[in-house]
Length: 179
View 1 (cartoon, rainbow, N blue to C red):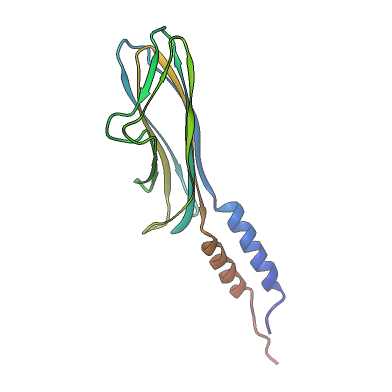
View 2: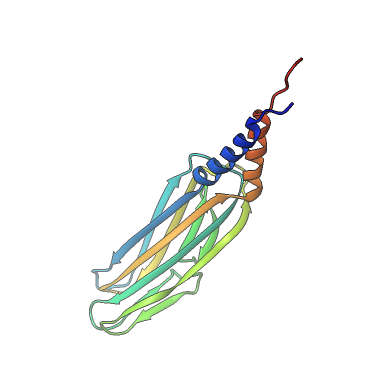
C-alpha cells in the first residue's frame, strides 16, 4: 500500500525545487572615464551556487545608458574581439550579448539608452553541477565620458529536473504495510 504522504512529498519537492533552486547574478555598475584617452574596462560579478544541477534553463540580459560629459560626443564599444556581456558557468562561457563588433554613440552633452539585449529560457547541460555563475562585462569607453550598465543572468532547473526531484521524493515517501 502506498502511503498518503506521497502527494504531500511530491508537492513539497516541486515547491522547494521551484523556490530554492533558481540562481541569479544581477548588478548595475557605472563606469566613468576621467582620463584623456579611451579606456578598456573589465568587470566581473560571481555568485556561488549552493544547489547545483546538471540540466537547466538560462536567461539573461544587458542594457546601458551612455552619457557624454565633455561635449565632444561619447562612444562605447567592445575590445574588437570579445562580446561586451559574457555569461559564464564554472568559468566557461555559455552565452554572449553585444558581440564583436559592437559600438554605440551619444551626441555632444547627450544621453543615449542602448536597447536591451537578451536571451531567454535557453536549455543547456553541463558536464558537472553548477558551482559558480558569473557575468563578465568588457567594454571600451571614450575619454571623459560615463556609462551605466545593468545586467543579469539566471539559471533554473529544467522542468525534467524538477520532476525527477519530485519522483525521487515521492518514492522515498512510499512504504509497504505488512499484514
